[in-house]
Length: 261
Image (cartoon, rainbow, N blue to C red; front, side, top):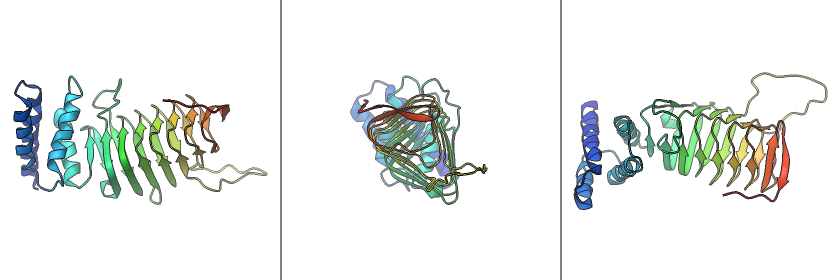
């Protein structure tokens, strides 16, 4: 699809989605969606693309960034990536992303952030999405050449940073609060007697884990399933036990046999 056709298709989508809040019956709306979907070559299931945009639009009283959302999401889908994103999203290394599910960027859990807050991805390694993943506005991902980030059905809240030179895994149904920092590399070395070297720098976050706001996760950390990390904690070593409450600086186990919902 050339750029002229791209912008024409985008304008047709905008007109159709803008009409969704008007009184005509549901049958008329769906017919309009099917009609416009037929004009989008290069997308495996363009009707699903249109109905998904419709769902996002109807989930809010006002979608101020409608044009940006449609053009950005259309661009990613034409590149074969199942991504729905705000217009302020910037992905460098899109070809290194593997999306086995749906990646939603900035369209949910936006909270107090404005629509112009950028979400950026600098991917020199690999970025894999399994199932549906939600990333809020203002997050930054820097993936090193030999690193892999794997996100599986999780939610990442706003303004969290991920500087990954080795590897990061986040398991199903895990929640990461706002302004969290994940770093798996020191970048500088401090030498002293009896220093213990980290055998693995990869960060592994298990399933159904709640990481509260302003948490720092350092290299080599492994957190067991069902656990909770308290706000403002700095986690410097692993806690593989399941269902524990971790907190403090440096973090330690505060309680065992906890659960959250």
